[in-house]
Image 1 (cartoon, one colour):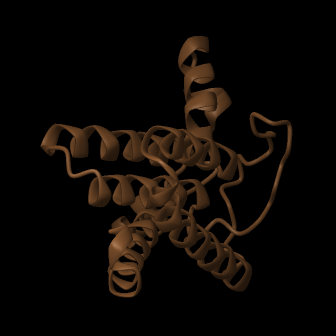
Image 2: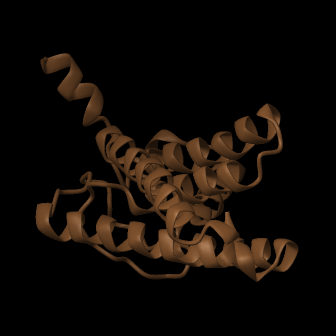
Length: 176
């Protein structure tokens, strides 16, 4: 049990543990795909490519996920790793609770919605969830979250997307 707790609470000190400057910059920028700004840009791109009908499905589910994630963070006020001293890409340093990871929840919500509504193929699904997983792991590398935080964020994003899609398919079958 102690080993499991240690694994779930592992963290990195980004400045000390990663020496390659290119890797540091890549992780620092790539992680922002999971931010609300990154998610908004991705949803805008999806709506330009696919049309507004997709956003009628994506936006409500995304906003519900965002509300639930922030509510859980506010209620639990779970501490972040001690390495959380740096600002994000936009120069801000928000210090909300750590559990669940908002970036991870955001990106897994979008990945799940994309695979539900764009049933391309297995390679597309692996690619989309590979990107989501990389964003999630980047949160640990940056010292912003523990493993348990990103597992919680991924579970929340997946479950709300699936339940929300089912609910919207029942309410608005013409959009699904």
